[in-house]
Every structure is written in C-alpha cells, then in structure tokens.
View 1 (spheres, rainbow, N blue to C red):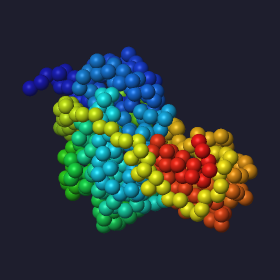
View 2: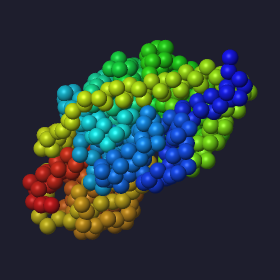
View 3: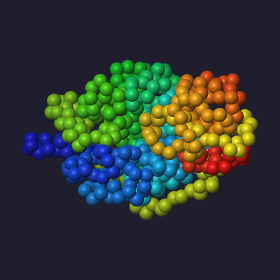
View 4: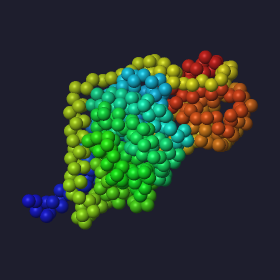
Length: 478
C-alpha cells in the first residue's frame, strides 16, 4: 500500500495528466516547461501560438517534446474555414460543407489524410476535428460551414471518411461536438444553448454521425456545452453524466472523451474553470481542454481543485485514474500509428474543381469588367477566428456602411444572420455580385434585390480559386 504522501503525489500528477492546456505566445514559457516535466497531459496549439509558417509550428512542437516526448500535442485543423497552420494564406483543402455538397466520399477521405499528413509532419498527434454536427438550423452562429451539411446520413458518411483518412496518417481524430451543436441558434462560447428536441429526434439526427464516427474507430470525441433537457435539464453535456453515458453505452465509444474548452461561457460562466473541470471529470470527461492563452497558474488551480475533490470524495480517485490512463493510451496510440506514415498530398486543381462543383451560382452574372471587390467586415465566428478569407479586396467596409457604386463584387459571411449587411445589399442599385462565404442561407432582407449570388459553402484556397474562375469568366481578372 502506498504511503499517504505518495498517494497524494500520485493524485496531483494524475490531475495534471488529464489537462489539455494552452499558453500564450509562440514559444514555450519556462513555467509551462515545468508543468510538462511534472506530467501535463497535453498542449493545444491555437492560432495565437502559431505564425502561419509550418516550420515555426514544427519548431514549437519540437521544443515541447524536448521537455517530454509523450505529451499530446493538439490543434484545430478542420480544413476550410478553421485552420491554425494556414491563417495567413487560408486552408489548402476544402472544408466540410464543400465536401458534403460534392458528396464524393473518397475525396473526403483523401482530404482527411492530407490534413493528417501535414499535422504529423510538424509533430501534432491529435486533431480536434472533424465536426459531426448536423447543421439543421441555418441561423447557427458557430457551426455553419464547419458541418458537412443538414442531412444526418450525408454528414455521417463524410465524418466516417474524414476520420478514416486522418487516422490513416497517424493523427488521432477528435469528433465534435457531442451530442450535436447543429440545431442551436446560440454560440456556447458566449452563453449556454439548449437543444430542445425529443430523444427520438436526437437519435435519428444528432447522434447518427457520432455513431458512424465510433464505428469508424474515432480515437476521441469532444463534448459540447449545450443543455439537452430530454437527458439532463440541469447541466450542459460536458458536465452531464447522463449525456456522456449515452456516448459510452448506447454508442459504444471506448476512447477518450475530450471536453470542449472550459473557458467557454456554456461551461464555466456560473462556476469558474476549476469547478467546471472537476464536474466534467466526474461526468465522464477524460481530457480537459482549458482554452487558449492561459497562464500556468490556471493549470495549477485546476490541479488543486481536482486534488481537493478527490480528498473530499466528490471525485472518485478511480474515475481520475481511468481518465488519465485513457489519455495515456491515446498518446501511445498516436505515437505507434505515426511510425511509417507517408506524406499525402492533393492536386490543387482537383480541389479547386471540387470547390467549383460545390459553388451555387444564382442568377446570371453581369459584366464585371473593371468591378471592384468589396469585403463587408463582420465579427468572425469565434471558432474560426481571424485569418484570410475570400478574394483579396480592393475595399473593406463595416457592416451597415454604404457600398460603392457598381459594378461591384461584394463579399459577405452569413448575410442572412446580419440585418445591417442585408440592408446594404438591398440598397445598392447594382450591378452587383454577392459572394456568400458563409452558410448559404436565404436572402433575408434583400429578397427583391436583383443581384446575382455565388454561395461558396466556406472559405479555403480551393474555394478562392473557384470563385476567381467564376468571376473571371464574367470579366473580372484577379
């Protein structure tokens, strides 16, 4: 039997091993190196940690692994709108909504493999993707084009293909956001959304892609900070044993359960991050994502909260040990699969052709010879963050500002959710082509305007190339 002091030290170490944390800046701080040496389970690299140069990303990962080789290193690299490695230039591969519109499962698998190969090449072994949410609500402010579509069976087959491709490259997938964030009209970064559907509806819609991901062997699943009243009206999914029990028992997921970032309002606004971390572990989460740009002191606070919860019997030590062992198993699996993986690349023209097939062109395009390209700048989806989007503009205006006289190509994101953007489009006499880079929603607020519209279903270099081709055929050469 371990001495009390040894047991306490073991609990403190386990409380580090279940954390997936992120520091501020593009180099590893000394106090974070100390956390790694003591057993911190993982580092998640966000956009603020990366410069847009893959060589810099590889150097940062090497610095992390020089402290401890078996640490998990994760990032969000979904393709399309969400990229951490290519914020300066846009993702080189199409995102989920483009792939879903094309509906070529083999292409989706190849895209997943290409993303995995690039991540593996810089030393990242856990990708927080793909998105398995069914975007059944077009007003969803946080999922949108990150989803493969609004049909659960289509989403399921592409999630399974993307997972298979990614993991064939030696990178573990983390399918998100269980049990499904698609039918919500609020952003869980900012508040606590509710999924107000009967369990039978959720089983036939929200859960279908997650079941396919589990069947495909997804290494991990990420929770969402949404309330599902049919299962647990008192807590968001991340903190709910009934919701996470559904993932374990009904869907049969035996891999790691990763929390969405605990700094999000949906998880911690009313309780704080350390308390949310304890509740997430108790509910069944194994790896606790804390969110970007955090001080080392927060990791220590979470560690202390977990240790105190074990000491007071609010968190069984067996649950903590099981979570830590699952995280360690994920790390071992990732390192084993990475051996012998070959680089996977895709031809840019092939991807541009696919993106062109996904584009929906509404109405005849006017003569665009000499047209100006105008971007209407609106607040970015928090999950997407800042980065290159669309064609390089001649002019950037804010939502609600008047647009210059035509001919113009006006670039927007989710115009159907933004009345001030719709008003500007409705007021312009034309000629105008509206390029919708967000979810292809209705022409709310400018239904009667005669403008042609190009719906791209998301950003990314292939879609930028496709739109360049379309407007070029109408006389605008970039």
